[in-house]
Amino acid sequence: MVDSSYYYNGGLAEIVARPSPLTFSFVRHWFTGSTSLGLAMELLGLPYVKRNEPVVALVNGQLMVNLIEEEKTLYQNTLFSYITQQQFADVPGLHLNWQKIIRPASWLGTLKLLQKQSIWIAKPEAVVTLAEKLESLIPEPDQTTTLKQVDRVLTEQVWTYVIAIGTLAEFFATFVRRECKDEKIMHFLSQQIAREDWFFLSVKDQFQVKSGQMTIANYLLIYGMRADQDYELTCPRWFEIPQEIEKRIDQSMPAPRVDIEKPQVLEKMDKFITALIRLQIFRTQSRRKALIFINSLRQSILKQAGQTNIKYKLREQLLNLHDDTTPYVFNIKLNQENTFPKNGEGTGVSKGIALGRVKQIRSVTAIIPAGVICIFPQASPEFSILFPRCKGIIFLQGGPTSHGAIVAREYGVPALVDVRAKNIPDGKLIEIDGVSGKWNISPGVKPVHLSGGR
Image (cartoon, rainbow, N blue to C red; front, side, top):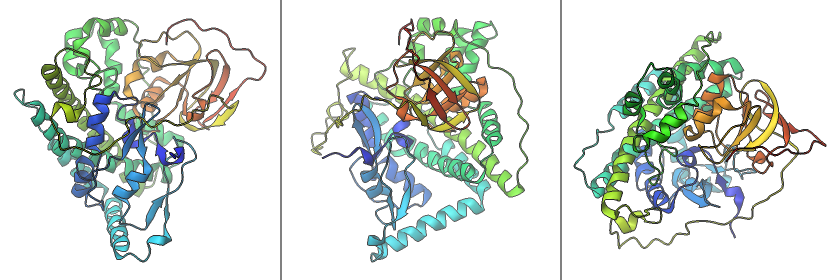
């Protein structure tokens, strides 16, 4: 029987929220101990096990990390095991598993892991240098490459470097959040990251086009590799739908210019904050480069499979991998709870208090009425054009350093993350607090109908 407590909807699962069978067949290939994930751990000198089982799974159509498989891949040869999840959005915690204490490999792996992390903490500047080198190693795409060649480069190089840089960035993000609980730190981090973050600038520069300071041609030249679902192979890149992008740009809003003074912190902590900012930028740059290869892969698939619906094609079929006999259930079904609590406490990611009617958002083309609290599936870049139009935001998944949180903070929109808000009906009156992460549905208030598509 499948247990929902062994899945997590953050981390690697934030690559694409609800992948098609085609995209998932590639994603599951990249995220194993014997492919990109394992190669990334090898680069960083971290313990891992070369396994063919993917650490991601589709659960009710949503991409999630399978913590059982991830533990077997990353922590089997350590003394650690994952703590049982209470919610999909809970950040997985580790505990000492004393049943492993008799295995010498567990002690060696634990020492290797702790030693490596200690070096990172002792030399944050060296970690930034490493991330810069890894980002520079992502190759430029060759227009003449075949589908098999693109697949191999993505597996052996691109995702290897993206995952390695992301691991370094997440380690320092967790460390800084734990050591610096001041909300001003997160706002300062967001502003510094946003100035160079390619995904954030793709939102900000839309107003440059609207105001005539940038042409649509130049905009698409810079950001055309983006898509409504960036890593979804069936989703057209923005350069493929220029007229639709122009329509969205007409609705864009300027980002307010607010300079946040750098908070006073200890000199040692200042080094970690500076390192985290640079690591986040290298992470963004590596993901931007990955999108170029995702486009190459998409175009190669379209060329090979024709302009038919490629949604249900699979990597194994396209590459004629007849020897791949690994059984796999594409979509694990869990019982879905349709009820919703009247209040909750998630994670605050953008300060401020907002009161408004709920609107669940499931499409980037959704119409946002004035004064609504929008609930988004995740804090990923795909919905970012809509964030500035919201009075307040609840993300069902994401974190303080996600693109959604950065955009919300830059536009001054109160926001929090809490998966428990997923079933709140449209029209409910709700108050949210972007600092404490608390939200509360006003009792006795009937929902109202909100016009506009989803």
